[in-house]
Length: 191
Image 1 (cartoon, rainbow, N blue to C red):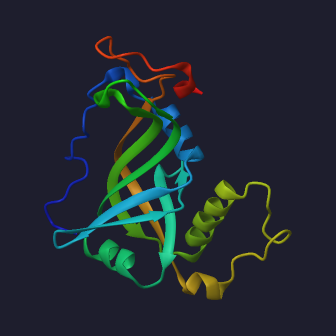
Image 2: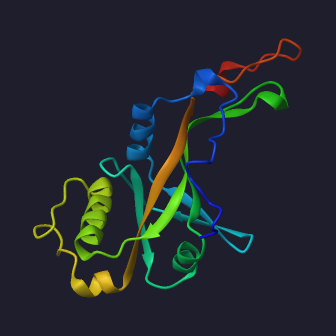
């Protein structure tokens, strides 16, 4: 990690439209519902983005995910821990009668922080169990599936993003804005 990097010094991006900003509780809720997150890292100025499943660990205020024990994600994490994360939930496409106003319903979270590789076996098991519980909440280790083995842990890198700051946004109108300067769309477009 570059010596001059200080996540406390990094300033979050301000939201252009304050009425769309999510509270911290709403941001946590989006992270609980979002299925895929995108983790952006870099190696000597070359950006790399990786879509993955993830889990928000509220107790540690961190995002957890995993990958292979070797590869670009692991190399990037060990080279430069600065990271950006995003996740979104999408609703309906919103047609409009002018090109500028076509839109999409969405909720999104962007987080910035430091990426680290978890090394303690108990912490890794806990993180992976939290990840499984997010996506398969009705399944139990030792009942519906075999618990995580030592061999599986050796083949897996488990990561945590320590969140320095985040922002959540909700843009969920029932319809896109329409213009009086062009004929109105018929109701068949809003089904």
